[in-house]
Amino acid sequence: MSDAVAIAGPSGWPGEDAYAAHLAALDVLADPPSGVAGVPGLLALPNRGPWAQPAGRALALAESMPASLEPHGWRLALVPGADQQLARRYLRADVEALALASAGWQGPVTLPVLGPFSLAAVLWLPVGERVVGDAVALADLVSSLALGIERHVAEVSAAREVVAGSDDPGAGAEVVLHEPFMPAILAGSVPSFSGMSRLRAIAPEVVADTLTRGFAALPGTRVVVQVEPDPDVISAVGAARPFALQLDTARLDARGWDALAEQVEAGVQVRHAVVPHARADERADPGAVARSVLEPWRATGLTTADQPVVVLPRPGLSEVTPGAAAATLRATARAALSLGELLAS
Image (tube, one colour):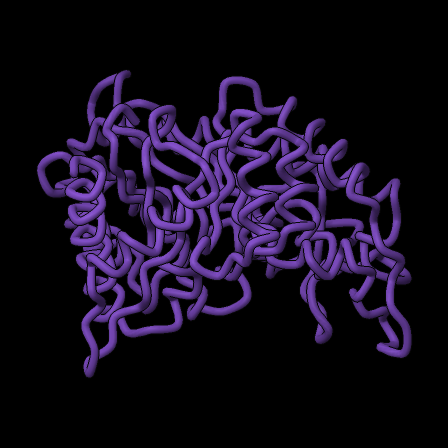
């Protein structure tokens, strides 16, 4: 993205109509205000059930990693279960909805995927504990997911080519790995099957090394990792050198900003998931959102000269109404305009 300010789309959206959801998001993201770049992406609609929720979608991608949906969650299996097959059908339909809705869009798209560590924290071994507690199974899952993501990127590109009637549908795709369970994984607070104990913490250097190998399996694809605003998580994930870290920077304390500054100085970009969800009784102040991004950034000693300032809604947008989700994206565009004015002043 060459523009100084950009808006990125959310990973989740409310409702059950994938085509309508992509049209609503693209209405803002594919036609942003002058001076602002927009980056739409594939949307997940988790309200449709476990097949469309993060773990199910990730298992729809995982290569040669059969799983079944049990009462306590997803478990590895000998053959793909009916629920995993259904998750794959949902994902294919969503890719088609994105391709149709984005016809004429020549820019990149973002592809959200539950990250390997968080997937391993909710996925069970065929017999026994969670995958995250087994180093061999975790390594297999990382490799499987990387292969599936590589295929996914190609399939999204192919779908866009078919709709565009051209072999040049746009500027490719970026993968956004979501790691919401990373704080618990680093702290050793992931519960065991019985709930009576906790799985052993994974060392930060193991997290960094594992993610580095996963990124290496995706040559030519930009990988963004969405993390919690936790300094230990920022340091561990940032050490793997993703293209960017995506997080709610408005929730960072001084230690968190120091950890983030260290990653920025190492060349990692930042995406600010700071725009509040729209509410009927309250309208977000775009100037306040813009200041919440720039003021602590500059106070930490960072500059915006080497990377665009990218803003997007806070996580959890799928939990609001479709109207509120669309209003939140419009608020994101207004915040980006305010950011541009602050940068120019």
